[in-house]
Length: 123
Image 1 (cartoon, helix red, strand yellow):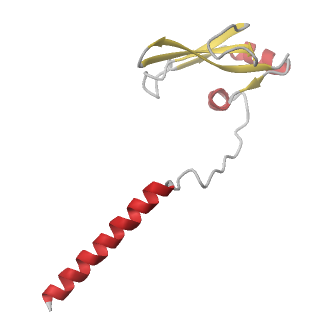
Image 2 (tube, helix red, strand yellow; image 1 turned 30 degrees about the vertical axis):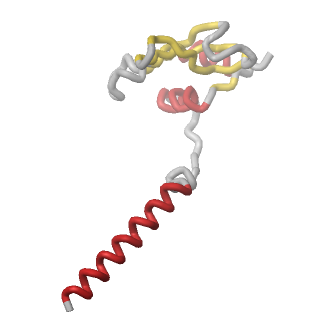
């Protein structure tokens, strides 16, 4: 059985609240889980101690059993010092999409035309 340590969403519409759970990877996101390991409330300020609560002993137990944490849970565990930080490199993340690049090129072309018109009017 492939185990995951992941987030299960709760809370109402526009007010998310997550449980950190150990679950079979084949179960739905908000479906059946084996054990609740903590909570995550993204609405609280980032420096709040109540934002992320994790039972680290149980997380270590499940990881020893072969459970794999998801990317978001891995970040929580890195902040708690359970997992060593890994280097992330995604240089394409900051690059705008095709449409945004086209809009930027059009804007630059219009600005260049306006600058030329202003320069020729000054002469």
